[in-house]
Image (tube, rainbow, N blue to C red; front, side):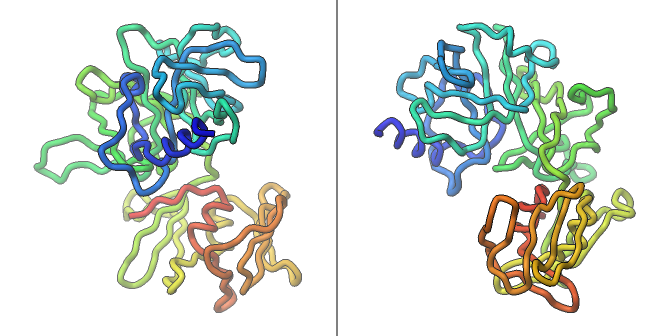
Length: 330
């Protein structure tokens, strides 16, 4: 039980920055100040060790670390060969091989702890660091005209990914062209860096979201864009909607945002707004309700569903969660 408690306390103290180097993993030290929230991802690493159950059992040499032993369930997560950037054949991974894994903060209450992988990296050359896993929070921000520096992507959980004109962008298992401008909020990438910390290569991984939403607080209201932003030139034709600022937070129009993201929406007298994807119901909600109905059951909302002027609204963060849309602020 002490070990299990230590695992959860460690999660609360992990750095909120997503880019965590492999070298730092082997010399992990407690951060000077614990973040206010559990980070969106954690990194674990270790050598493949004997295990009779499902998943891959990793053990590292840091005996004092709460996560020096962990079972990884790979599932559909991309497994990447660090030397080539190509798929890593996990069937050929053998006992003693070192793997680096990024996972969500949720863990199974067991010993050893069990995590679900978001990305797996192996076959790291002896003279190199493992690539870093990052999730883009907003589009790249370029220096002001006349200022020195490079474009940088803000990252989920804090930190930034700085790129240069020499950075190479590659896709994952496709032949699509990838440019800096093609990286959007919610995109997940692996980043190879040179000895000076500059991004040499950025590999775009498969998307885990249905799309993304951008918003910011304006004097006249709360503009919301779906799968785009607010640049007058770049974002022509991007669906935009007006959110409502209330004492309970920002409310967003269900039908407009859902349909712009590829969902179907209909009204049912008994169920209220019913949102579906490819014919499968995602959720339904009635005006005034404090809960939302999903195929898995009933879940609470952060604020009651609102209907005003014929439009049904839900809290923006709740709506993005149930529509599986990445929410980019600012």
